Image 1: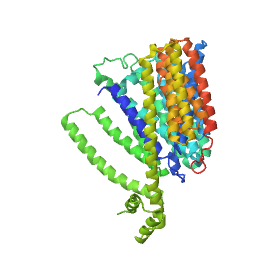
Image 2 (image 1 turned 180 degrees about the vertical axis):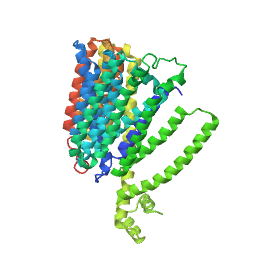
Image 3 (image 1 turned 45 degrees about the vertical axis):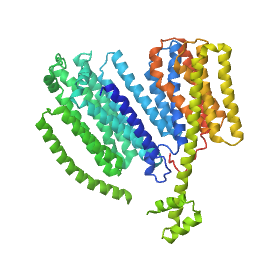
Image 4 (image 1 turned 60 degrees about the vertical axis):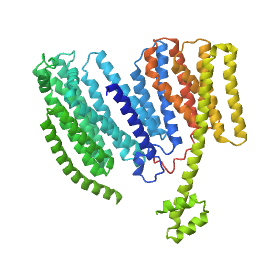
Length: 361
Length: 224
């Protein structure tokens, strides 16, 4: 099946799934733990939130069109970035989680395209654009923790938390595959000189670490018992740093030949980006294990389900990415996979039962 | 047989509530259980019936709307300019008169159907009048004009179906945004019109949402 046929199919399935989740959570619920996934309370509420989201999207595009017709050329992504923040804020203030989500997506599309465009136009390191993805999603996660302490904002906590985890997970997962060799090469293929590139990396690195330390110290007083949640934010920050550092370290060793192999020389190119891939996979697995741990600490079942799903996808995709595909390999792989999953499933079922029992209590 | 099945059988036999209670209490079920099952059984029955009638009427309205559009499109040139405007206005007038009449005699579902038909004819009118005066304009702009009209109608008339039509018409220009900005050149008049209409449409939605949906009771459901 061609790729252009799969994308609409996946989108369609995702929309249907989202509708089912929303409608299933629509009924009247009175306990606070149930309210964390309650996006709407009735069809009227759903309609109201969607209309608000639509109005904001139309305002953003109308302003963009208006400015251009007046001769003021500003990139669409700036409208999307500012409009997205505004939409998110109004969504929160108006009890509208769906408008809140629409706002976040407008913001993400604006800021990611914007940083990519700015980096490309100004010939600066395009790793910055990718780094911004890490920073955005880890900020979402960090921001969600401030909602956690406010029990009345449980819904927004779940949205930001989930979005942060998914964004960080997908980016790290993608950068950890051999398929991302083009991306790694693209990041490193900067117009800058090696010295300037490393100097700039060092400066940004210092800035990011500094910001993180400041937020960490400030958070000690604010987050109190939930400090360990910040670890996921730290995973994002480490990812951001690695994206900048790894290609530049490689440039120091081999400034001329990096990523310049021909397309047929896969083995050599794979070897070149091997440290990058290994570090990203370690980061991914660390994040997933931490998610599993937080599931147990916070007694939130969705974290448990998500982490198990992530592990399953990780093992399956990495097999096709890394292992040479022969019949014997495949059979051995599935055999060992089956045994591992049976044993893990047995252990996890017990853990899960304990968690569910403690939630009921 | 479970209590659910027993209640269903008794309701189908047209037993009265007292008979159902007596029968099931004798079999050892609790009053609260019987009450709940009875409520559910009745609710499902009524909901399915009313939903069926509503759907039939809505499909009828949509079919008539489509028939009108295709009839006009097939004989369009035979009408002349005044004839064309007359046909569209006549269609609109007839549906609104029908809607007012059905509301007065207490047929809310037919009223909703006719209102929907009126909005469909209005939409067809926007596109067809564009053809009369031969304006080369983007389809997204025509849809915005249509949506602005529908949201006004939805504000003035009490009809649930129009709210969903507003939603559908609001989503359509959003899907058309990338195509619109890629197809049309910079500084074309379309951009001005799109900007003005977009702002009017959004202002209408904001006003509509904040005035019509303010009665939703969140006290039992939300914690933010």
